[in-house]
Length: 183
Image 1 (tube, rainbow, N blue to C red):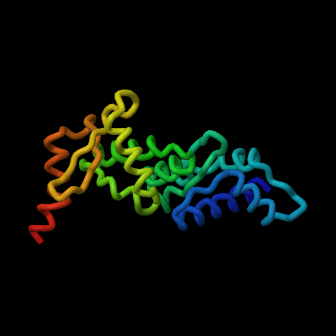
Image 2 (image 1 turned 135 degrees about the vertical axis):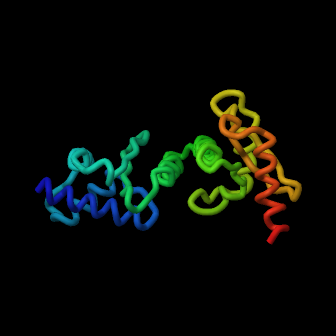
Image 3 (image 1 turned 90 degrees about the vertical axis):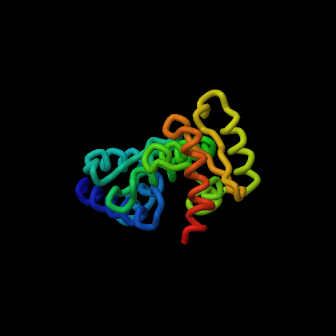
């Protein structure tokens, strides 16, 4: 049954990733139990054991505080999966900071604060304002996160570890104002 279980699990992970979500070991255990028989209970530990033999180039995972989550790398980028995991863990400040750092490092660009109001973040404006203010004022774990505003009032966050203040200001202005004027 191990190969059958592994096959079922990898397909379930792929399907969840295709829907744009992570799937945790508890959900996989329940789905496996239903699939193989209502009388056979598949435990989360059996899911972990079976997926330990999956190709790590195909199946990615995150160890959360309470549960392990999986995703299919052919269906979902690692960075997007990491964002979803941080959302699931409920650590909104860290999720915002890591997104900002990734955008500054990889692209390099500041992140418009309003992006966090849309999917997959779906933060309400009040919560977002409070969290972003705390991040920009933090002298500890988030000391590299700063805020910059474009001349039209759009607000951005950036990481000083990856962008200088003048560069972040220029890019924010370009994205919010100048690019629109040049169309």
